[in-house]
Image 1 (cartoon, rainbow, N blue to C red):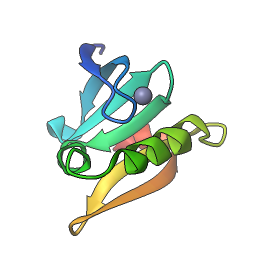
Image 2: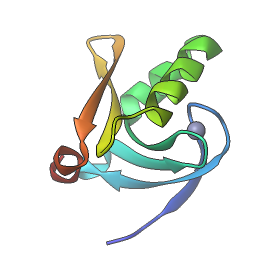
Image 3: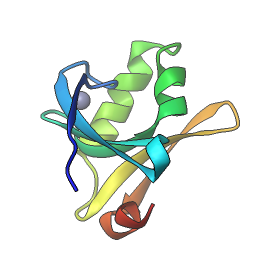
Image 4: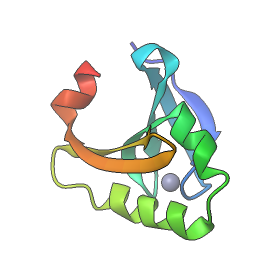
Length: 93
Ligand SMILES: [Zn+2]
């Protein structure tokens, strides 16, 4: 099931693509710079209000994901939380 949409990466602002997952609450991004990562739509909204250094840091974290892992960016309360999850977990989200 592939339904790629175009959107500039919310971390580095380059042209990227994403798929919706988890009932459209999460976006599975594929970015030429940040590689693959997952961001919740609420976290994406929150990031817009934060300084660019936060986004740059998340971009680096996504790019440096351990093998077979992807960065998951979501909201915990009102704060951004970023954790590495395995690709297997990502597929079952
Ligand atoms: Zn990016």
